[in-house]
Image 1 (cartoon, rainbow, N blue to C red):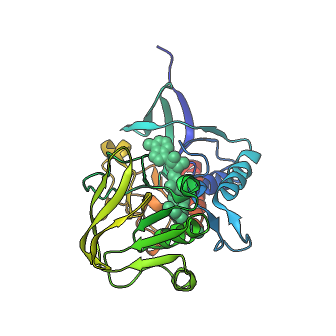
Image 2 (cartoon, rainbow, N blue to C red; image 1 turned 90 degrees about the vertical axis):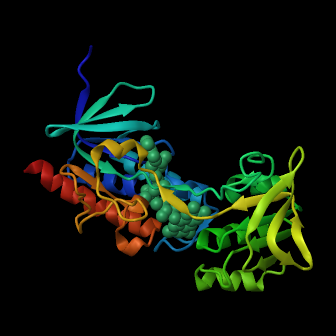
Image 3 (tube, rainbow, N blue to C red; image 1 turned 60 degrees about the vertical axis):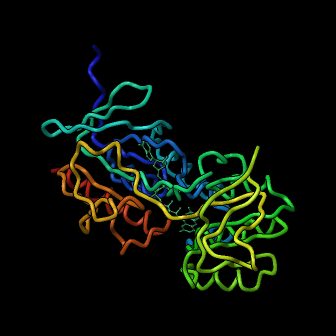
Length: 308
Ligand SMILES: Cc1cc2nc3c(=O)[nH]c(=O)nc-3n(C[C@H](O)[C@H](O)[C@H](O)COP(=O)(O)OP(=O)(O)OC[C@H]3O[C@@H](n4cnc5c(N)ncnc54)[C@H](O)[C@@H]3O)c2cc1C
């Protein structure tokens, strides 16, 4: 059997954290490869970004493309595939990659971000793609002039509601608490928007339909009814870290399963760094700017480690 190819560094994840790390690693002369399923990362699915300094009003897709091109400018190879498992043996790591030969590396940067949390309610699986979606930017277009709801109270939920109000006739924003936890910026936009109606202190208990979604049942009455008729439902109920593939490494994580990092983005396992949404760093403020910053810090630390 052919010997696996060994890289000084493998970056897992092609989002802002992985791509920023790649730019810095290239400029430090660290040979590496990126393995990341979704080029540009989660931000590619976002409607509009207007909080990354120096870049105003850019769509998530355009921003993710700019980031990818910037990393590729330095000649990095990006494999758009999934890492299934990593094992450490001595001072090396062996990566099992879906549909490709295994790779070896001396250092690993984990920048795999998060996955959308499911509500685990009746109808959620049954009506996925038949009215239920986890991505307003991807699927909002299908609900032109229709009535939809967004579940959640975060920046992502608020952003999705505002985006959908530009396409749909009516948008309900259903949140389990009394007050949205989104930034004031989003709350102001929502309050001024006549198409968005916020349903506070309410949970969706069931998603109901026939061929496709027709209504959601609520755990308390709203406008004298315990249901809302809908054409589409967008679930923005938070995220969980994507770390299953690294379970054999035994990395220390916090109570939410996010990788614990030191100030140089190193982890509890020698030779492994982590950056971006997957970590407990940057005061758990999971944004593009913090992901890029952690990626840059990790790249510098890895470069110093490899020189030693
Ligand atoms: C709807 C929405 C709106 C947002 N709006 C903003 C905003 O306006 N401004 C802002 O700053 N932030 C925003 N964010 C947050 C921002 O998207 C994230 O903070 C940022 O994308 C984190 O970057 P990351 O590189 O850590 O992870 P991600 O962007 O999630 O990238 C992870 C990468 O890892 C890959 N990956 C995962 N598992 C594996 C595996 N096993 N094998 C190979 N590859 C794998 C993924 O395919 C992807 O390439 C928003 C998020 C959402 C959901």
